[in-house]
Amino acid sequence: MVSDNIIKLINEQITKEQYAAQLYLSMSAWFYSQDLEGIANYFRIQSKEELMHADKMFDYIHDIGGKIILNEVAKPPHDFANAQEIFEKALDHERLVTKSIFNIVKAANDEGDFATTSFLQWFINEQVEEESSASLLVTKIKMVKDNPSALYLFDQELAQRVFTPAAGN
Image (cartoon, rainbow, N blue to C red; front, side, top):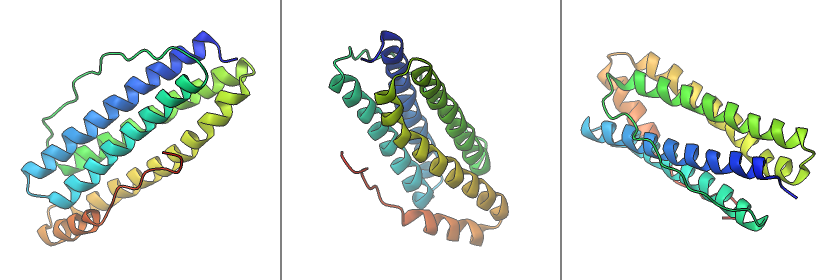
């Protein structure tokens, strides 16, 4: 049986995932306003992935017979200085999400909650991928600097990304 404490932590994580979706959508909007539709596409898909993560957690709480409690989602920032700042904020945010998921895993392990630990393994693997991808994009955007041709190519690269729902959704 999953404890009320673990259910509370997962409910809080749902809110964090929904905030991440809003944050990435806000970042997408900024890139659209700069006519960088490829990079906007990348962040739009990031937003969809975060909602998918929230949905997986929502379903898990339901499946274990827990009470789903949706909390208020904070308003994300919408003013950004430049593209590099956005990519750096995205990486920082992914690191926060990873830490939060690790905290739930630790609590579940401390309680001997093997079901939740097993469920969260997918998220641990996902966060390794998310942080790696975000770090690579920070490196690439730093290489772009103020080179319009490089920015154009970077934008074209990120335009190729498509949303792929995770297995089981």
